[in-house]
Amino acid sequence: MESFAGVGLTFLAAVLFAGAAVVASRILSPRGKPTDRAKLEVYESGVIPRQDAHVRFPIRFYLVALLFLIFDVEIAFLYPWALRVKELGVVGVVEIGLFVGMLLAAYVYFWRRGGLQWQ
Image (cartoon, rainbow, N blue to C red):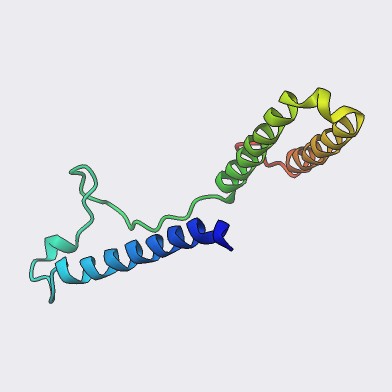
């Protein structure tokens, strides 16, 4: 039970910090309606917006982002495996082969569905 005291104290500090941030924002934030319409306008590097900020992007952008994340996570898992490959033996090689095989299947599926074509 004593080994969880540090975890409990960290959790308590996080809750207190979050609560203090909410209370401070309530105290320090301005009240009432803004009287100036310019205060409600979007300001992006001094450029006046020409269209609505809610523009629809093609799903292809999200698919490519997900593909990048999948292979980025793959590298994150392959690096520690590569450091300990001798200790893991044949079982480790088979497991990582299955892992890479599943990711390769996902890549082939994405490729066949036309996710890599920019038309």
